[in-house]
Image 1 (cartoon, rainbow, N blue to C red):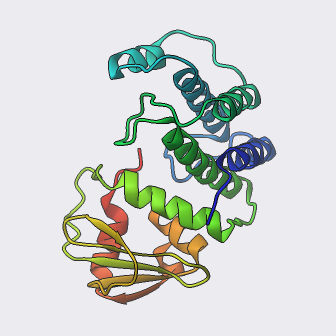
Image 2 (cartoon, rainbow, N blue to C red):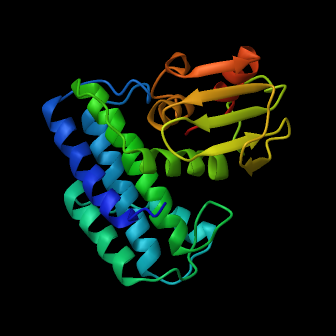
Length: 233
């Protein structure tokens, strides 16, 4: 299953801006206190920062933090996205600073595609647009969640207390997350299973949709604690 990440960033980024324009001042439910205007400002700053990271020399965390905190002029979202896409299309998978365990441009491509998709969903929910996520993109964004997001625990969240099997029913995609949080790909029985369309699963994991849209088998409390466990900030 091959994803064209730059094409995904382009399409979802444009859809995000269009949806926000349809709903000025609307609340972004998954990001308390945010409005559609704040969402477009956020995505512009994110794209601007990653374009700087990809284009420049390999930075330290302190150098990247100084750039994030600098009093700089942020371009509009379309300009910032175009600059990021140009950088991603020109630069190969060279080393670069990232906050993840993968310090290369390949991570930036993949994660920015997922971030554009999830924030496109935020914008479309605010605008009352029906959400449609292609199965391949949904599966990849589930993989991003399981690979990069599970190390940050939501403040005050209880331990999951069991293993979770995730099974996409409309396309290939199965994982087991054991009680220690380690992830393996494939079909293995867990204390709880979350089954359903890839779109419904990705929305539940990223807390943009209800777990009730999925079929939960086994220990439902384990499944719900798992969905609530990770910090998405």
